[in-house]
Image 1 (cartoon, rainbow, N blue to C red):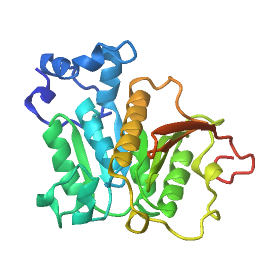
Image 2 (cartoon, helix red, strand yellow; image 1 turned 120 degrees about the vertical axis):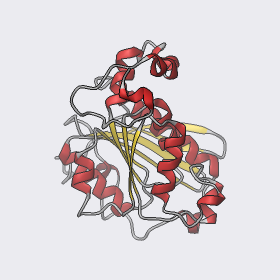
Image 3 (cartoon, helix red, strand yellow; image 1 turned 180 degrees about the vertical axis):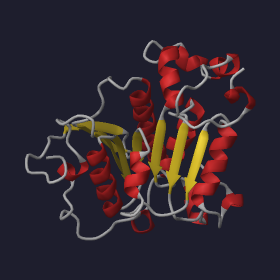
Image 4 (cartoon, rainbow, N blue to C red; image 1 turned 90 degrees about the vertical axis):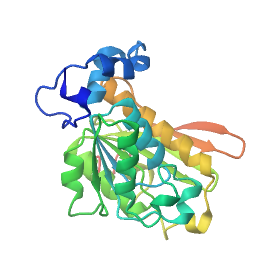
Length: 267
């Protein structure tokens, strides 16, 4: 019987890991039935390491779905605490979590969903001091942050490290989602979409508001893209395609995102 069958945590990606036992095969059976995943794909999911940047509305469905699906190691990085205003959309948390560090509460929620997953809570802001270490230790990065400086930092480090970056954003009634694939030279990056000089001031949910299900939709799409990369690393991604969601009438548009030949990050 493998260590995972007892609920013990095992560091994903480390050396040889025992094959899935009967309980894990049953737990993940609906994935294993899929031709696009199968047992080999689920095993790759179980060995994958994902960094989630941010622990808010987008991160909530990402964290829960990745934990439920059996990602081997999930690291969540955020320096914020749970506030009453978060509960309208951040489904990781309940009233009992108000005042707690988001990463600690998120880790507890993920462990309740799936005790076989190793969860790391990093209760600090992602910055120049820790970004390279955290991103370097991950196989896939899911950007669920809510500010431009963090997004540009994550993009820059992920690109340098050659890691796929699953990006999402949501504000008011509109959302965006794509993959900036640092493994492929032809893939555009976040800087190709928004240069660091494009924005004049920060726009946040506290000022603009956000439709609660919108962050769930975009975050679930990020989770799906992350799991697809983990299960089938060679499969096509959304790289070069930006999805735009308007929650007013539930319309999704896809626009082509071209690489900027003069981008200082990906060229």
